[in-house]
Amino acid sequence: MKRIEDLLHLDAPTVEGGTLRARLTKADCYNDEVIRIRDNPVSSQGGIVVLRGNLAPEGAVIKPSAASPELMSHRGKAIVFENVEDYRARIDDPDLPVDESSVLVLKCAGPVGYPGMPEVGNLALPTKLVRRGIADMVRISDGRMSGTAYGTVVLHVSPDRR
Image (cartoon, rainbow, N blue to C red; front, side, top):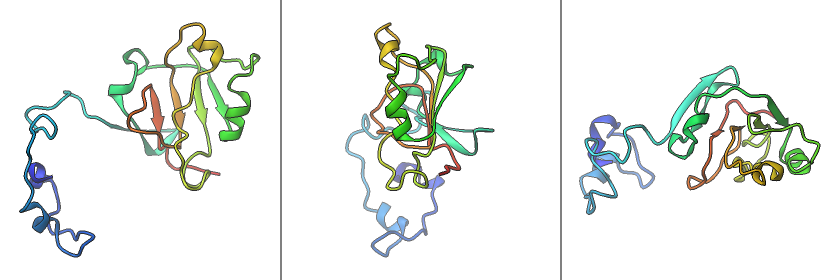
C-alpha cells in the first residue's frame, strides 16, 4: 500500500484507531517479486475486471487470468439453476440440455439468497462434458469462490436476489 499512497485516502481511520498514513510510515517491502511496483506488473492486464450489463446492473467481477481466452467473448444458451440445491440436483442429469457452448447460471448464491455467502460460485462442469474433454465453460453467479479457483466464471453479480 505504501507504493500506491498517491491513490489512497491516507487520513482514513484504521481498525486500531490511527490513520492509514500513520500505518504506512512503518511499511517496507522486502521482496519486489512478491509486492511489485506499478512499472513491473506480473501481467499487463488487471487481476480482476468489473463488468456491468443487463445481468449485473450494479456490477460483477471476473478474473481474466483464470479465464479461457476464447470464452472472454461468448454467446450461448443459458442453463439456469434457481439455487445451489437445484444446481446439485440437476448438473449431472444426463437429460440436462447442456453443451460446451452453454452458459451455466446459478441464482441465489450471494449474501441475500444464500446467507453466510459460502464458496459455491465455482460451479463444476457437467460430468458428461468433462468426459468429452471440456475443461471450461462460462459460468455466472451472484456467489463467490476462492481466488485460487480457475475458469471463466463471472461472480458477485449484483444485485443478488432470493
